[in-house]
Length: 122
Image (tube, rainbow, N blue to C red):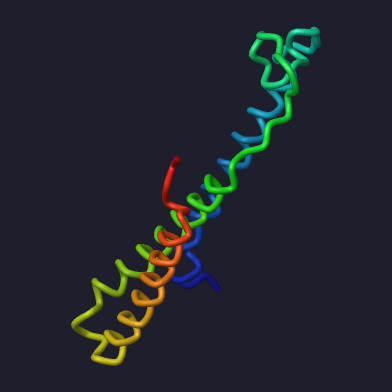
C-alpha cells in the first residue's frame, strides 16, 4: 500500500539515483581520458613546474588553524541563532534566557581568543 508520505520520498530517491549515476560516469570518464604519463616535473610538490628551493616541508603557524576553528564556532552559532530568531515570539521566556546563556558562553570564548592573540594576523 502506497501512502502519501512514501510518495514524498520519490523525488529524493530519483535524485540520489541520478546523481550517483552521473558521479560514476564522471569517474569512469576521468579514468579513461586522463593522461597516465608521470614526468619528473609533475612529480615535484604541488605540480607547479617550479623546482623547490630548500626544504619542501614548512611549518604553518597554529594561529591559522585556531582562526579557522573560531570561524566554524561562530558559523555554527548563526545556524542556531536563525531558527531561534524566527520562532522567538512563540517559544517563551525560557528559550530567550537559554539563548542569552548560549550567546554569553560564545562571547566569553571570543574574549578568551582575543586575549590570547588568536585573532591577530601578525
